Image (cartoon, rainbow, N blue to C red):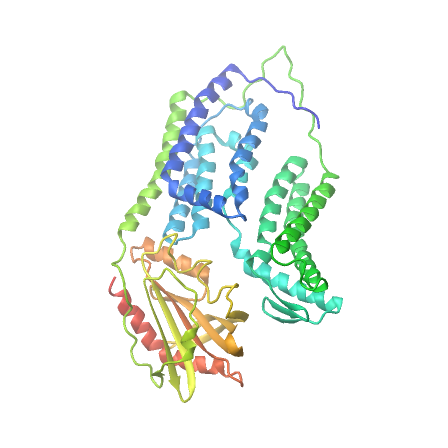
Length: 519
């Protein structure tokens, strides 16, 4: 690699940087103070989560990447751009939406973009373009990627089953649960490979930037850094099951499971980087500066006063959104300890039942109710959890609120899908799940949400409806509705739930509306 020759800057440019850098640093500091809860939430995840521990080194790496650009930056005179305040305001609004909808990732991404857009406000677009990659690399500091876990787990389970069958090992699978002659295995969160994927993409993106200069090669290597860990995780899962099978479950269990997995992943990633380095593009030699002439600055040096005005303006625009969030937070509803009682359900009678031994793993609700009903020998269960005054720690839609956890020792999810039902005389799309429980019992489960009068089974729409409701001053009252029934020998569970849903619609809707009226 050719060593870059530092090119001297003009006295005017150097003077401008001596004013602009303190102004930029102060603007960053004040914004981080304004959004300290969001920043601290990110930092706390870096510390406690192995998946996102890389966030601790992203800010230092960003500073190092900026330092590498110092020769190019010396040629540019910082000049503020007030047009960038529009983008900064947009990022601030996105942060507000993330807060009112309790979407941590949206709030955290928005904070990073606020910091990014402060750069063109204070230093100008030429400087921002020069620092485009280092600034965008900060986005890797956001703990983001858990949403891929269910699909990655599904793919890993399917590939493991395929590999075992191709090897000649009989396997019985239900969802993420596998049974082979020597034992049973489950694909849980740690087997999803999301840790490998996030680590590979972060390091792979940095490697592509430092190793290549053409956009095509950079994008190709980033794409490879996404594909390789996914496929490698499939091989890792298959390898671990095979090691356990061939060793009589003496190897690849317990701690060995994780150690072998990381060793295998490390070898694959090292091979990927070694192969990628064979097509590296060395930096072009920098032109030697002529000692007899002074290179001009690219932009006109801004006055000290105008730079500070731009920095103050960026902080003021950013501060509007925490202020707006506090105003919306004051418009909370009254506390809630119990929901309105359910009215009688036509044709269905309340009955004590073993169905209530299963309870959805939803928490942090303001109130809930669960009951079983009987009609002509058919049983059906109903679970309602009502949410009010949600925040980032207490919310209805989160990775912690599920029908059943993957490590549940009694219940397991074995199938899932969607279907349209009739509820309160209107069609509703619901999520369907089949659970296997103790003694071989199977439950058919339907789940969807209610958000201030809107029905949906989509987590994304729940967040959108919640944000819209809060921004218009209507609060965030929401509820999750879960209906369940035994599958039965003839598989009549869906038919039983369809009849129960039609009958229970008016009672459930009335209970939700009456509870909303107590706001």
